[in-house]
Image 1 (cartoon, rainbow, N blue to C red):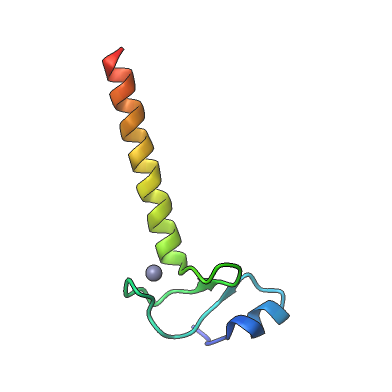
Image 2 (cartoon, protein in one colour; image 1 turned 120 degrees about the horizontal axis):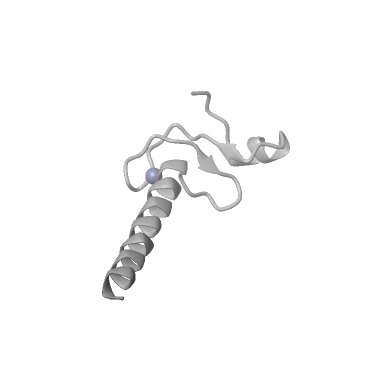
Length: 64
Ligand SMILES: [Zn+2]
């Protein structure tokens, strides 16, 4: 993957940039220009939330 700084990405109208360095969770992934979050971290956190809510939903439905 080509290294592109956050400012370069923003100037090129891209919503992601790539530093070539791993994030604090060790992912070597692109990051979002807007919040600096690594794409992999964002995806994992979305999955985690989805699992949390699907478990809540299952528990609630099972209790009926
Ligand atoms: Zn990450």
